[in-house]
Length: 310
Image 1: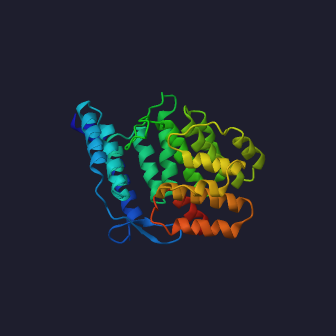
Image 2: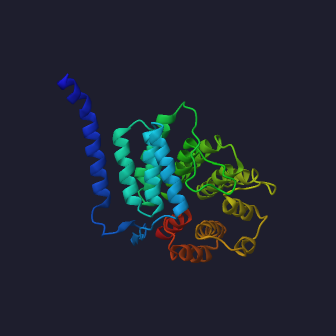
Image 3: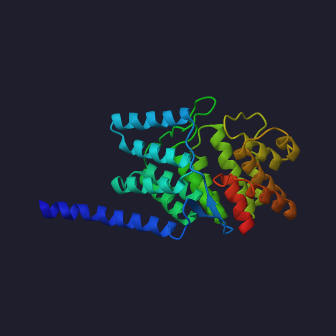
């Protein structure tokens, strides 16, 4: 029995060594308190902040409940999400890697780690994780993912599978692999059950198709967006699609007060719109404004950064 135990445990040890080496290699040479290096070569830092009391309490409660109900994977995910919400993305990746060592067949762990790899500009590792997640959940029923901070309607809008395809598409998009991005968005779009996720997929798929030169297909994407659609979360994506469609003007969506996240989203989208219509100088000016902000974990920021790096 002793020999059988050693034999069965060996793959776990090897996996642990592999995951640990991956993390050591990724963070090698970074200054203390730095999170990663931007695509333009700047060192990116965050001040590790404590969470608002209500959010911290909610996540602690969800994590504790998961443990009480013998759902350790859920508890691991909540703890890693809590760490990421403080701005410590590196530690969140390490936490998820540790969980993967214990539960290597759990797709949710790869989906969440892939998200944080995008934040840290490790797009190849993100793609690897999302593809692994898709392999593991293939043929299974989808799982609704609860929000850390619920929306105004307290209705979770995304799921394991939609989030996996959405973020896989984004990782490909940020690498300039626009056809692969479009394919991922197409798969995710087939699984959407609400306007918010539909609009999120349509937004990025439209841009991926335009980037790849498929203008006719991109035009058909805009036909799926109408003025009577209501949004809970993804208002900025919707408004940008309305700009692309010629229904809204740039000034209409810039006149209202926006959050930092919305400013990054709108900035990248408007820069894309100017760029795709030949106004390259204006596009770069907007992307630089986004890059000069502090919201470097936002997808609109990362996309603007990728454009400037190119």
